[in-house]
Image 1 (tube, helix red, strand yellow):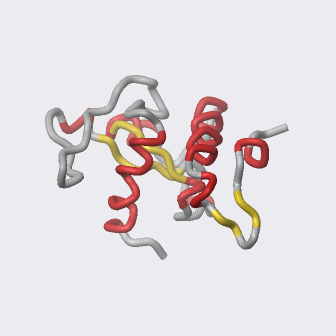
Image 2: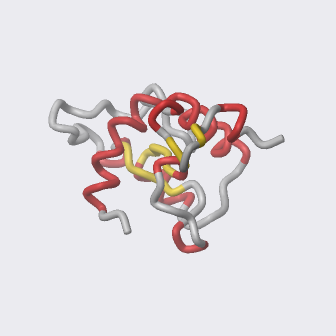
Image 3: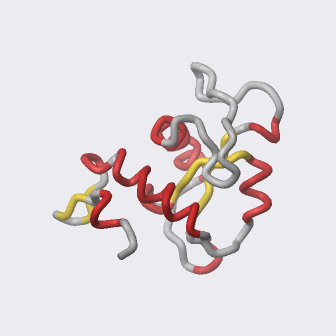
Length: 115
């Protein structure tokens, strides 16, 4: 099981992969400080979202995580992902493809994009 601190450490990589854009509303998130802590309006802080919620069996794996504003993450709650979330997830997976290994297979945009 991934602890909250482990998710927090993944936030800078998600933020970078998404270009600082919220995967839910498409607006910019506040940049992270040097220490990885958000600065400014708490509603605009980036947070880690489970695209497929843990409540319905979603994993704490990097391939199931996106960065969203805290408010957007709260709004999404435990709902299933919409098409926009899946597009973001595919983009983040492609961005991190060399470091995302599932056994001997490397995830690429082609392997995660729904047909």
